[in-house]
Image (cartoon, rainbow, N blue to C red; front, side, top):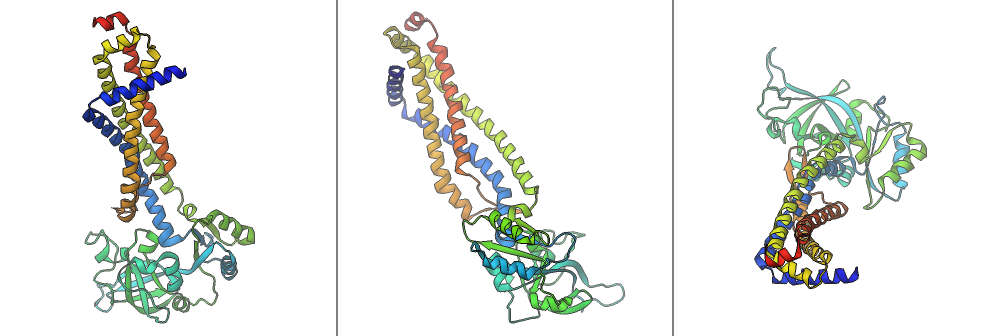
Length: 416
């Protein structure tokens, strides 16, 4: 068996060296493109929901999100929970948010007459500490225009861009529910729990996360007074952990501390539900279907190349068999050639993916309406696809070689 492998390796190396470099380069190039098709197309498709998940965690939830129970308006024992969280070594920072429903009005000073009504929206208003919120979600970096809230200045509000006609995709579309003719510096009127206050728009948030782009944000102290709240129970808490910390461990520790009865304690992924996971599963199926077509193309290419090579060298194969070289060695030599083509093609594909494409998409994500798509190419999945490419190529190289080698030796030598 060892002798068979050594002879096959000798024949394969000799044939590759004597082959046309242009032909070899073309086959390797086809293998590289096939490998890129297997990995990159699926990586882009799967990267769409993954990009949305990453943005959700980065811009809104943190690694752990704590929300009120469906039957409650706020998280009971919020102060105790916050103290417990701050004692965890994994926790870097937390951002408690007061949440309440309210109405926001614009153009109320120019609405004159019984038939003219000011622009009004029913929205959710978040009361935040802008310093803590920025440390957890980077809210100051999400500002499309304007400035972040100042903890020392009341009378200002941040609005998500989807609340303003000027910044929405549906601007000008009949039926779009937005505030018109308002921007940074404009005055709006906010009504919460029967109390009304005039605020100035300080900034507009641009985010593809709905919880950020459709809310209004004001200082937590100001919102508490406006809504008549005397307690310090918040509506949700976003928790930012140290890099590498396990969010499930923090979640379980909070539940073990007795807070599971007063709040929904979830990791960022759990809090998003199954919608994005279902999309990711669907895209993985699509990428597998597209990749299978690429594998078929690669296998047919290798089959044709090896078959033509074997047919043109039929007399040479017959002579090899005539001088005592086993058919297994000859067949195995063509298998080695197939492995060479697939391995080198995949190698160049790996270099392109991890040195060029992954860094590029990390710096320049694909701008889709609902997410900034990234290139999702985990190394384990990439190696599985590499194995599939090599396996299919080996089969495609073995079959034509066996067809020629199994022919009559004398007929092959005489060219009959």
